[in-house]
Length: 108
Image 1 (cartoon, one colour):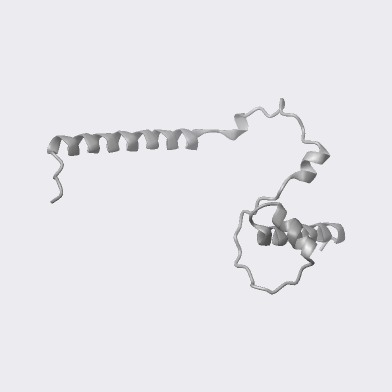
Image 2 (tube, rainbow, N blue to C red):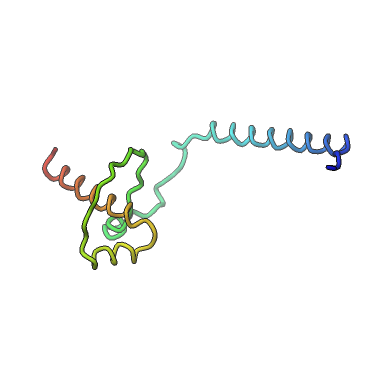
């Protein structure tokens, strides 16, 4: 049979929860009041061309993917897998980057 909590331990747990809730509300209010325009970015160094070229794009929107079958050369697949988990996502990212570069260069 499960042991029932005493009234005093339940009261302490409720007080703790209320205290945490107030702290979270205070933090949320501070974040909402933060004005990013007051941040001084002048002392941040500019990124070099090499740093910009090595960056990975962050995809903000998730679109439904279309399943396809694809045949790759064994060395290409080995290279993709050698970069770590997510080789299928990596294929999609590489193709997306090439597509966007082509669109920028042709103006489409």
